[in-house]
Image (cartoon, rainbow over all chains, first blue to last red; front, side):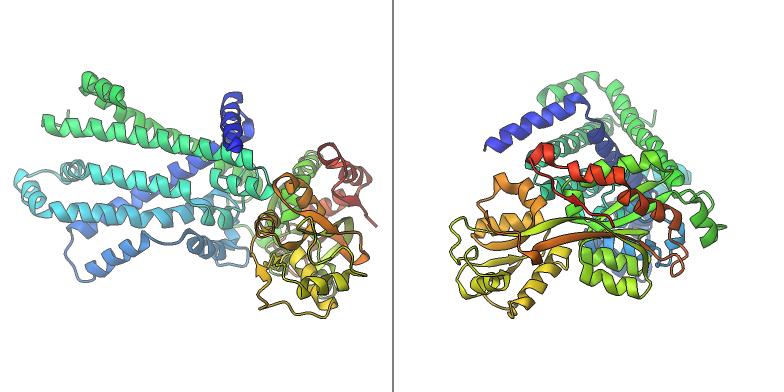
Length: 240
Length: 310
C-alpha cells in the first residue's frame, strides 16, 4: 500500500512540475484521440445514417458486422495495420509505420464500428417517428440532417465517449503500429507498459493516475455538453 | 457534480452555447495540434510530402529516420536513453527504437523492416551475417547472465560443479523454473544451456513458460519461488521487488555479448544505409564506449554493460 501513496505523490509532482516528457505523452494521446474521433465521425456518421434510414438488401449483415466490429481485439487490428504499413507491405512506400498516422488508421478501424453501430441503432429506433416528421416539414436536406442529429444526440455523445475510451484504453494496436517510440509514438498506455517492464512501478502508477484524470476530464466535459443539449431539447426552441 | 449541475442550470442557454463552443474548440485544438505529428512525420521521414513520386533510392537519400531494432534489455535498462540523444546531437538522424525480443529484431532485419540491429544472440546472428542479410557486424559490449532463484537454493544450483550440472540439478529437483519462452536473446541462451546439459525441459511440470519480458518473468519467478535465467541489468533494476538471490554467476557460458549490425542495403534498397552506418560507427567510437562503461554506476554501484568494441 506504501507504493500507492508514493505513486500518488509522484503523480501530483509530475503534473505540477510540468514534466516535459509526461506532457508530450499526454499531448500525443489527446492528438491521437482527437484525430481518430474526427475521422471516425466523418466516416461513421454517413455510414450510420445510411444503415439506419436505408432499406436495402445486405443491410442487416452490415449492421451485424458493425456490431461484431465493436469487439475487435486491438492487437488483431494492430497486426493487420502493421502488416499493411511495413516496408515489405503493400503500403510500405508511405513510410507510415511507427508514426502517429499509422496509429490513427488503426484506432479509426477500432472506433468506427462503435460509431456506425450506435448511430444506426439510434436512428432505427426512432425511424418511425422521425421519417414522417422530416418529410412533412418540407425541410432542406441540411435541415433534415440537423434535425436527425439533434434527435440522436445522446447516442452520438455516447458513441464519442466510447470511442475516446477505446483509444485511451487500448495498448495492443498502439504498441504494434506505433512501436512505443519516445517522443513520437509513446502514448499513455504504452508508456505505462514500458515503465512496468523497467521495474519503475511508482512512475507507472503515477502515469496511470494521470491517464485516469485525463479520461475523467474528457468524460465530464462531454457529459456537460450532453446535459446542456438535453436542456435545449425540453425548451423546444428553434435552431437559434 | 451537484455544483456543476446547478451552475449549468443557472447559466441556462448561455452555458449551452459555451459548452458547445468548448467542445468544438477541443476538437479544433486537437486537430490543430494534429497537424504536428504530420509535420513531424514529414520532417523525420523526409519524403512523406511526396511519397508517390519518390523512388526507393531517392527515398534513402533524403531519409533521416533510422529504425533500430533492439532487445528489450537495452531499452529497459535505460542505456538507450543515454546513448541515442548523443547520437542525434552528433548526426543528422533520428533514431526510432523498436524494442522487441532478439528473435523479432533479427526477423525485422531479415525482412528489411529495420535499418540497424543491436542484439545479443551470436549463434542466431551468424547465419544472417553469412547470408549477407546484414553487414558491418561489430561487437559492442557485454554483460552477463545470472541464475537467480529462492535464496535458500533448494536445488543446490550454486554447489553444482559446472553450469550443465547446475541445470541438471534444477531439472532433478522440485523447484520450478520460469522460462521467457518468447524467442528473445535470453530465451535462446537458456535453451542452449538446457541443450548443453542434455535436458529437454519442454512439457515438464516444473518448467513454466511466461511469454513475457525479463522484468515480468522475474516477478513471476519471485512469486512462484522459482529459478530463472536473467541478464544482470534487469535483475539489478528489479532487485528490491524480488525474493530472489543470485545462485549462480560468472560461468564462462554466461557471457552475454551484444553485437550491432546494419541491414545490407544491397539486399534491401529501401533501408537507410547511411544512417545505419553512422549509428554503427557511433556505438563503437571510443567516447560512446566510455559512456557505456560508466552507465549504471551511479544507480547500482556497478556498471551494467562492459564496453567491448573490436
